[in-house]
Image (cartoon, rainbow over all chains, first blue to last red):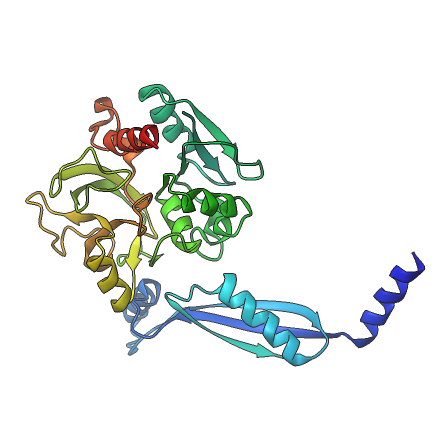
Length: 95
Length: 230
């Protein structure tokens, strides 16, 4: 039991909290029907715009021992679940 | 011989598939909840629906549930795995099939009967069809726009991994016969070994003539016949 407590307190001493914003969007050239529909609706309101693209933003808070570890974990999350590499690009911003 | 229909939270075509397999075809079938172990089965069907509310992307969450590891294992020994609609989305998200399924070109839920051309008959699921035959089944989806990059597409065509294409009544894969913007009118694909099929149309909704058509029944008949030979 004591051993357990020691490990936990040791970790909390070295780990930092990070806030990350992950943006997932369609790769260039892939049809974005939602963006195209919004563009048409904007035109109905008199706004003529050249293009509209949509993206999904995910806000993630995590603990890591440093920013590289945080970035590595977030990269893994994007590759394995948050983005579909067939159709998406993603970017990660960490604060 | 026993078949499994896997249910996730939000599956809603599970009972229809069960009915066709168990009651119409007479093949004993179990409904398997995704948290339960996958026992000894001769074929697995992942039915349509809206697993996990289509959160993140259609099929993305279900594809990462532990039961999918069992499905991958099952597929790797050559046993039949059929994914219908949301099941197809789950199979591409899990990497069992190539490509991706994104929002329809006209971004609306599209529910109608379509004509399909049979492109391949030497698969676990299409042996009861003739190559080039045009059959009718309903579609009902908003994320059925099949996409694969040009290299993947080239390889899929070279290795004949396209099972069905959307066509007009003459059997031509025209733009107007394409209900969702799928690249090259692709409606269903198989894996390299032909024992995993993903398709957007619903064969279980076209398996009894009282429903307006029974072309889909031959998908299940083919699967059961194949499993019987294994």
